Length: 575
Image (cartoon, one colour):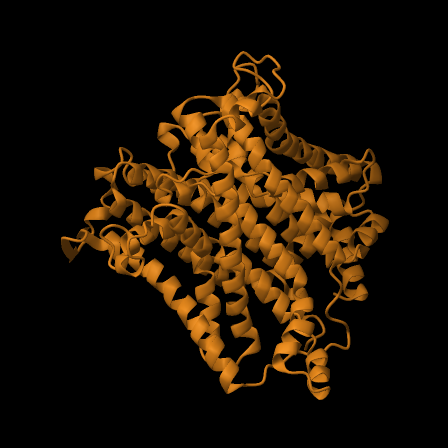
């Protein structure tokens, strides 16, 4: 938007809204901003502090120092869980990042046909709960699986199954980072390398890899964090293999040992914090890959390269389709593998869960509430942190709070909520046991990514909007609703979509916080799998996936429908 257009629009607003004294505008801004900061303190910082303190206390609340940690590491089974988590996370990261790089490279650096379809297929796993690949793998490689002959006497229940399922679930996260890095390439570098006689292999190692190093490092840290903190996959297909995320569940739900659960939560925090700071360090060292003179890179066809990468990408695509297809087929089969007649018996959820279909409608309601409230809180908080001129370091405090959830596992956060909100002395105890605590915990759990989305969108806008409004006496609310929101509408839609999809598939934090009447679909899947109702669990996973897919399509259509009305400023000067 040009300076003239911005000034004219602000001037128009000043005529229609009138003059607002600066101190009134500042006071009204604080009335909105401070409650958001308090929300972040209560929903993010307080639970994390509570779970950390609990690890140094006994059941009576007395301080015992490192006694709980000593007890944990004196148990060989517990130590084995730490080692299993490290090994599984390492293998999962190697497999996931490697396959994501190959897939993204095929799309951006080759002329393989069907690349548009491959882009869509690559993000499909993110629409399903992490339990779906775990359940599908039991039908593929389990004792009665149709592909069990491929793994011989090796059991899918254990490290092998966890690695494959987590690689499937984490694949879209690594792929999107790799794709973004590979798409921001300067074609001049590749042309210069070819003119100097560099081979394709040398170009890859000297031009391509250095250019994507930040995306590569970030994807490594993200996959490590997700895989080491994931609960659903290990619960369904872990077998006798214990990992840290399962230890928390067993200590809290199975043994009611909250102190030991807090110890495991603190241990889970360590790799997450390391990944968080490692990602920050890599981001600071990342140089700019594009300039005003950059030329879009256009790949040139190569029969050998296209064939090799085409076969690799085809194999990955077939695996994704097979996993999703197996889950859908298993949900329709009446009794695997003896009666393969198709039907909807497994979708009659009232036969397998006391709430029946209500768990699904609970989840839709919960996801919509999370998307709406979360989007409002995150966008407003981020806007104030970037544009509000408030003293006392409030902006810095908010930014620190907004980044904390990225380093906090969902299970640890959920356990912290028990310590904080289950206490009768807490005036906020009334939200415990209802949808409110599920919504608040999920907004807090996924707060960082929407905050970064909003930051990216708002930093693209010049501060002249607020400066012009302040000079003309237009209140911040008028500028915010009439100028900022229409411009940032696409970003807000993406934030809402992210929150909805995350809420539909989440298990981590809410597994400790739901009540019988607020049971969610993802939790019902875990319960069904526990009781041996694997096919109904697969059916519910399919319903969740279809709902997420439908919401994504609706969001895309709504975005296109409202784009001209909400962003008519883009048309200024184009006619």
